[in-house]
Image (cartoon, rainbow, N blue to C red; front, side, top):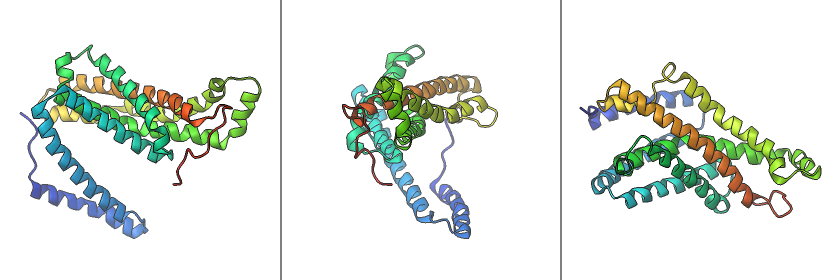
Length: 262
């Protein structure tokens, strides 16, 4: 038995809860009411269109179309990550897309340990798993790239001094990479440590609402958390390495024109 459907009228009444944050914004004069309403309208429209598309793609269930949708999600994720981290998309789209595709390919290859190929490449598995992984690694990648490049911009003397003392470009950038990756993965490690005690995770909740037993739901939750953390770490690491190839000139100086104004 699947989750119980929610009728549109009840969902509309429930959406009136948004008046609570709107009232708080008005009291504190927080200028975010317009962006909040626009964001929620966009969410409803986007999710409605995705629901219609997924109904079709689940019915067709063509592996090539499924993989094509994953590619679209990767490109959209790259746009969101560069925008939030202050980087120019046209300069970093190719290296970041390569980093995320390599990371996804690695983790989906590992999925073969627990899932059969025909199961994994079916639309009902490939697209939700890919979406959950990409959605959850966005924040880590934004933090990583933002911390990495802003560290290089704000502490150029540290980078230049290390290079002048005979260090390679990798050795000079490594401390900045380590600092960025630590900032990105620390919240995820804290979330993993408290999962099941502080929060009931989304994958497990969805499995239970879908009619599976808690024991099966836990198995899938463990699977997806390992996949998310591994992909977040690997994509952040590869993202910094591949983005660096576009960010530095032959003299290992940070190029101009990498960042857009915020």
